[in-house]
Image (cartoon, rainbow, N blue to C red; front, side):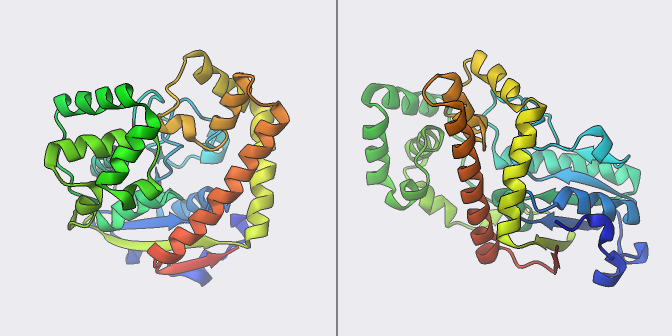
Length: 309
């Protein structure tokens, strides 16, 4: 991979501070995992007197400093970073939670008169910034409890079938426990399914002038980088991070439990699979995730600039 220090930003885009206003402008740097977004963001932040805000759904968790590839102190290079490692893994954290935190943080960033640079590969997060979120009504605690009670009574498979009768399209791509519970509770609350609500006008997009940049590279190089990085994560203690989750008896339906690497290392700690299988399956899932990222960005993200590295 070509390091960001060799990239001539002046040649790629006009980065004069005269072209940016800390009050009105935001830069988004997006792209697949392991493509070098963080290093490029830091190089750009140095040139623009910027700060970096995380838009990666795993790097928000304080429990996974190593396995989420969160930048270390040396890599921060004196650039202020926000929304990294601040969420407890036991929380069922959502993109709506993150978008609210982002907006709150941006107000604080304005006080520093620095250019905000949002960096990440989570399509849902990037989409929320650009287009907002579906306005799904709040669900009462009673309906949340009714949904969970139904799940516990009939079991996962029958509960999935029940949701499929209500909203077949949603269940095709959302079939884990938390999403099914959420979908059923929303239906109890509103008598309308998730597909209906997702089809309604979205609200809450970031009202800023946004310059979007997509970082691209050859897929085979990204796959190679992902395998290498996962091995390095294990050398640095990624298994110990997951063991802490395992010892806490973390709910396997929570988002953190399904993060890349976590799922199969938990299975290894359960003694359900071998260590080698856990590593191989984690690398396989990462490659599949990269493929899905490319598909999502191709279909849903039209950047202002593309940087090929």
